Length: 265
Image (tube, rainbow, N blue to C red; front, top):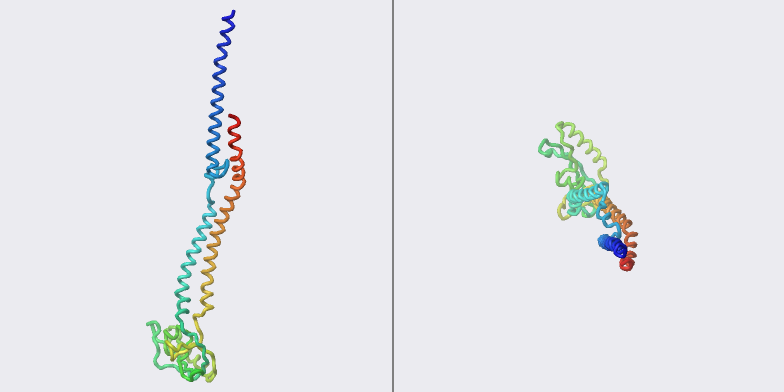
């Protein structure tokens, strides 16, 4: 009876001890895997959402299009700056028609020799002579800076047309209007250095016109930069809003992690 009662005890003791050892090994392995996964999550800086942050898209399609639109606006504004600079700003900087003087209308006559009009035809030339009150000298009056270069002696040149009689009638009408104002004084602009014998009635390139021409490219450049800046700021604020609570939780978990891991062992 002693042998029979001992044999069942030995048969049940071995499986029970094997099962306990396997459970302890599985528990220890599970803790090691959990600890490794948590360390990888904390290394990503999100505290339990590291994989989620890695898979999170940096920007949406609308944000990408907004950024591209902002860069396109800035590039187009730079191109406009070049165009405005060559057509308006550069002539204003190079212009010397700054001295204002008083001009008295003396004479207006139509030249017998017509001037060339873009190599297509000839048009009549209306010449206007004024007297400068400051220096008591005579000079030819022109409308603006460009007319001085196009027609050195002409105050008015009509548009190119094939009908010469109509052109002559148009110039005579303007001459009669000026003849009625002979002896009247008005302000004009002079350039004693480059054009001592010419004066202009009005300036085409002024500081006000240059600033107004630069206004639209400047607004487009500022709008493009503002659009890109707002999109980038929105992305950063959205990322910061997602990370702030988890970062706080991650710091607390790091403080409690050593004691929590060592206590079960």
